[in-house]
Length: 257
Image (cartoon, rainbow, N blue to C red; front, side, top):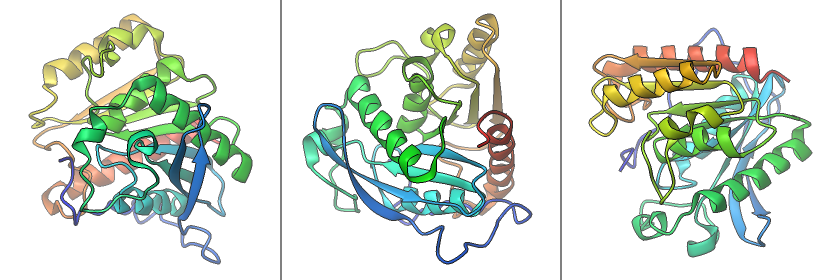
């Protein structure tokens, strides 16, 4: 599991946290339809500031409360945000709770299927907010999928991945091998003590992006574990705050409205 069930996203840095106006940062549950007719759930939070827009790709649990709250955090920080669920094809509509047995559904995921759902979520964000070129922001499995979207999904302004798997998965080549195909700027944020993602893999990813001349930033937080972006981890609060700052500055440079 990427997060404990009581995990909650850290707040953006206090200097950037903007109060919601008339409840505009509250997440609204949506039912969307993918290109193949799949119905799936998403949660959108609109911002009064309209600095840009992001599509949030969750961890293996799909549209869990952590990610609905994270969409609200992005809206408070000035970015329209939509988080979506991966499991409409196999588990029906969400959102997902503690009782959801996600592993059998994760095993049935395909990258093209997730990317079709991502496109539908991005279209919904565009229709609701007018954001023409959203960025993707993903965590763990979602980090992998965010990096993959940079290679496969046209029209993205940027791709951000928190501790995203870098090797092959779901029968396809991973971000390291696909680095040369990435079409937008990439930000990778990793924990130096992450047992799932060796620092050597992060270095290979960084080098592959350099060789492909893809605009990118890769940062490793020494001593931080997988899923350090969690407000319960007080010892990693500084890394979480720095990650927020790096991400928001990156989005302002590459994915501003």
